[in-house]
Figure 1 (tube, rainbow, N blue to C red):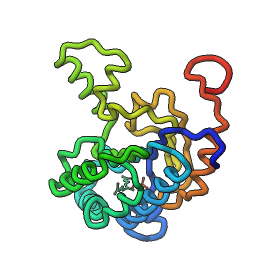
Figure 2: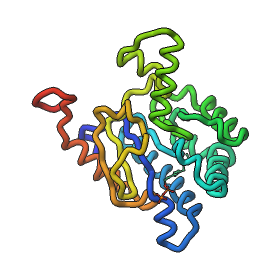
Figure 3: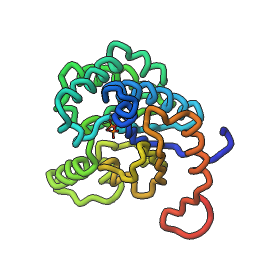
Figure 4: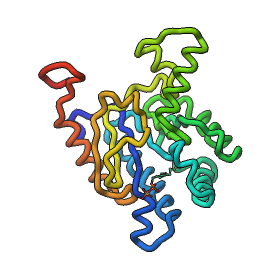
Length: 232
Ligand code: FPP
């Protein structure tokens, strides 16, 4: 795997946790728990293979209107992995960056996320962006409003600097599990030239081998960025 052309930045839409659990006659919360475990497995493997930036869609702005009981279960998972078992995240040896509107989250969860960001701020070898309460349209709109408030016209570079992902290179490769083929309001501006990959596997069953297969698929693609001929 070391010799193929790897994406610098891989983003994951970790879909299918609920369905995976329901098919096994288990509660959706069990699917989310297994989904988090797989997040550690897959992010760890991606970094191990040489990917430098990983972004995961952990909770969308739209997910915030799910039943409160399901949200509470997700918050409890965040509480566990950003606080009680935070060594699991620290083991990834990546700088943790939480992206999104955290206002709807319980305050202790927000605080533990910020604490983990501070604790990993000095790590430069790998970056893990965790999108929580995130919506791409909401992000574009807040950036537009910022530009208007500043009375500025923007170009692509200065607009990027107003987005919540400021300073993070655009994703090269977006992988969505769960047998759905859409971006669901994820990184819409940043995904302009991202290669897309859709897996029929549900997130908890997406394996290291599946990640390697996806990366081999990426390596065989010709990225022309609107230009002609050759590889990048
Ligand atoms: C979509 O699957 C996934 C989510 C709404 C949340 C995914 C979140 C995690 C895996 C947890 C991340 C945790 C940390 C600590 C960062 P779904 O449940 O909507 O699946 P479905 O489409 O089958 O219902």
